[in-house]
Amino acid sequence: MKLDWFTVAAQIGNFLLLLWLLKRFLYRPILAAMAARQQRIAAALAEAQLKAAEAEALQRDYLMRQQELATHRETELARAREEIAAQRQLWLTQARAEVDEARERWWAELVREQQDQRQTLQREASQRLLALARRALRDLGDAELEAHIASALLARLQELDGETRQALAQAARESCAIRTAFPLPESQQQTLTAGLRQLLNADLQPDFRSDPAAPLGITLETPSQRLAWTLDSYLDGFAAELQALIPPGGNNHS
Amino acid sequence: MNISPDQTILFDLGVVKINATLAYTWLTIALLAGLARWATRNLSTTGELSPWQNLLEVLVEGVQNQIQDIARQDPGPFLPFIATLFLFIAACTLLAIVPGYEPPTGSLSTTTALALGVFCAVPFYGVRRHGWRGFLHLYLEPTPLMLPLNIIGELARTVALAVRLYGNVMSGAVVGAILLLITPLAFPALMHALELLTGLIQAYIFAVLATVFIAAATAAQDQTANPSPPRA
Image 1 (tube, each protein chain N blue to C red):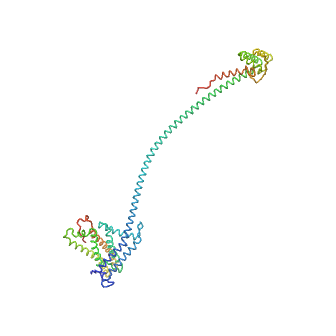
Image 2 (cartoon, each protein chain N blue to C red):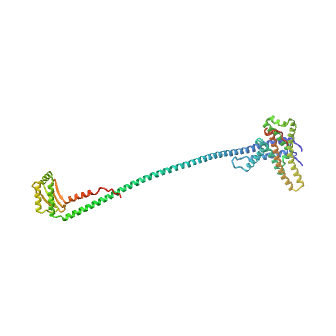
Image 3 (cartoon, rainbow over the protein chains, first blue to last red):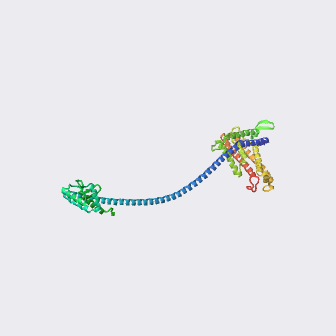
């Protein structure tokens, strides 16, 4: 076992050379790569933690918003329910009022129609009654009846006051006509002419005309005045009285 | 039969004698440096690692963790020295299976050189950590009377380091050669495999002891209340 000091020194040098070479080509690059990778991992972890923190913050924010939304939703729903109930009540009230009004209107219309119908019925009944009377009198009418009517005309003329009779006489002097439904007999014409001359104190020469379409009666016509006695005037007066008896509107709603 | 490659002189240039120890050391250095250069030519800093990079990172990180566990200190400053010791001794031992290769660690000169390297590294790191005064004060602990014994212990552990490694490697080679002469072929092969294992263990032990010595010299004062130079 011999120790070669030259070899020892050379091996020390060799070892230092190997140390330098490995440090240059092995440890430094490997450690640098590991450090770089660790740095990348640390950066990635830091980024991940940052993102996790952001995600957690977002989640908290989201949950808070969700809670707020739920609370707001409940509040809004309650308010909407109240509004809907109020609106419903309002519309119901309005609908009831409209229905009541329509019913009142309809009832009033119904009553009015009933009254109209009743009045129409009454009017129709009276007109038919009058027409029946008129036809009966016309059927019974003849020259003799006309003579009585002429007497009635003279009686009416006599009932006139002096001034009216004077005006009538003045008008009759210009033109005068006697209209009847049936032709008057000559004697009747002379009697009537004499009666007129006496009552009106005028020399009259009436023109006698007969018209079958004219109502039963006698009419004295002058250019400005007219004096008549006809059955129609009686019936018209009766109709007016009948109409006056029919009430203008009913008050029975049932 | 040469029991040490020192005795195989390849070139004799007078004072400078290039023996097999130096030649195989250079070969080993070239291999290690070449492999390191080749393996680290395209290092990746992303998640995709080549198998070689993966192997080297496992190796370097393993050494770092071992130093961290033993020294309880930042392994950064010691890593190149300790890892180079381990890699050189392990490479020499592993290459012993190549026919014709004589491990330089089978030479007492080489192991002495390595032990001297540790011997010098201890004050180097100790002084760098504590300064001259603080480092030399360690030899006066626990009492100045211990100074001679501490110095003897320092020298003895260096000799022990050198001889332990030399004895193991050399004995393996010698025993293998002797068995090859007197036993069938299978038995020396098995012994050779065992030699690989013991060689790796020796590399590990040498590196661990170097770490322990350096760590004892660089330990913080509060961690070593009564520090004393470690003994082999």
